[in-house]
Amino acid sequence: MDLREFIRWQTQKRNWQKYIASPSTYLFLELLSGFWRPGQAARHTKAALLFGIRLMRQACRGKRPVVWTNVYTPPELIWAWGGVPFLPEVAAAVAASLGRSAHFLKVAEGAWYSPDLCSFHRCALGMALERVLPRPDLVLATSHLCDGAVKFLEMAAEIYGCPYYLLQIPYQDTPPSRSWLAEEIKALQQELKPLLPSRPEEIERVADRINATRRHMTAINDLRKNIPAPWRGSEALTQVVIFLNGLGTAEALSFYRELEQVLRCRVQKNARAAAGRQERRLLWLHFKPFYPNPLMDLLEVRHKTVIAFEEVSEVFWEEISGDSFAEGIAAKILANPLWGPAERRVNQTLKLTREYRVQGVIHFAHWGCRQSTGSAALLRAALGEAGIPFLNLDGDCIDPRNFMEGQTVTRVESFLEMLR
Image (cartoon, rainbow, N blue to C red; front, side):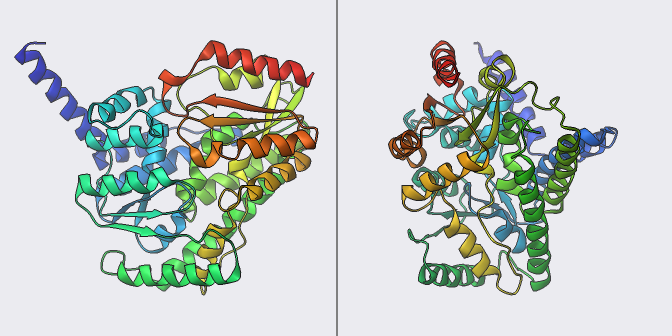
């Protein structure tokens, strides 16, 4: 590449970055989406699209403080405090779905970040280094579930030169632990008041939305127990980002309300069209690969095996009161079955296999995720004792270079053959 080509490439890259980080881009997309008039069966899809567009617009406008945080830090905490929660791990999943994750992974590796690290964080680091993400005013991490996210977010705070806070989460879910964590949340709220001036009326409004959304989510999960399943698990695994980033917003409430109506209609009509012919039902553990790949269609189309449910869609928390918001958030964090002793996850998995009447369980063992893969042996033993076939499927959610299509297809087809 000669000098003129290099200058042209750098100019094009800067223009691309400019559009990605411009609120005008998302205003245009929101206006454009107004011309889309979906039928009732696709209104929830439009609600999900609008949430993503409006989130990016708010994050890029800079009128509300942008708070980077990690997956399973309750986003409603930040919405209630007047900030805009932004999850770089979700941004990495979006980049993967658009076929761009390999580029950002190479950027991170070029900056000497080890390829042994979780690809969610490596991809997000590459995006941070390329300056294609909304600039954070504050980085807030919670210590539960993922050690890698804690260090990744600390590095992100250094890259952007903004404050970094780490909220330590107790390991055991006990009444004293919940009380201690609630006090920590209140202390953090007071310390962050100069940046996040939370108001009681906003906290109350967010709490009302959480509870209304929770009711729709619970109804949806009950509808998904129906045979045939009214919704493809592959779509559910894509839309889980609404829960991870949007809980507490009007857009998330609209999405789950519309989705409940769609699924209720399908169940009443006993329609198979949503998920096709279903000869087997599976429970899915962890997330799915987000880059283009044939795995989901291999299961749900070619082999007529519906993913009836996925553990990340479980509603595990109780309603939250605006008057005791910190206590409710503390209880929600500690109630997560993916946190604490691995037996909690095992027990939830066994419960879900019974409720959704599945014939087998697939655990997508994401490369670099110690939290999830560390309990695979316990899951295998417990499910084996219960007589439920279990497949620990090695893979990568973000890095397409780690997807071995031939090996994956062979293992999945062998597992499905065993189910027959």
